[in-house]
Length: 133
Image (cartoon, rainbow, N blue to C red):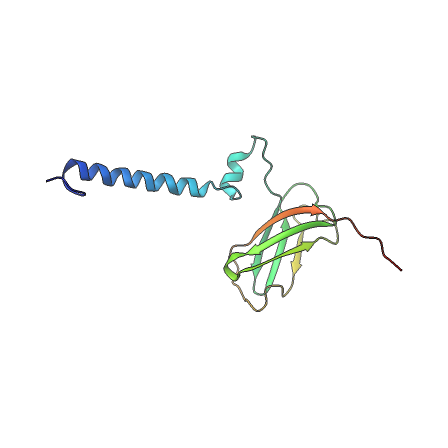
């Protein structure tokens, strides 16, 4: 009798499933946008995104993680999947490398502990519209 889990055939099936599950886990880790995927892409013509965000309580923090300033007027799109919150923030000043912008109270009424996932990306730079009298 050779069924799943019995005899040589069943053992091989279990080993194959374990191998396949491990391979799937590795692929998930290398999904574009994750830190490991960005490290793997370095040197292959793909620039890592120089912007990150984090949460603290009701506040959202945007940080320039790159080596170049981000121009005033750049649009930062952000989302916090756990809280089902998302938005867009236009920088009112140049954001220097390592610089941060605090969006105070933007996550209200969701109070979140630090460490909840936050995703940020740069959108196009918005041109300032001329003031009309």
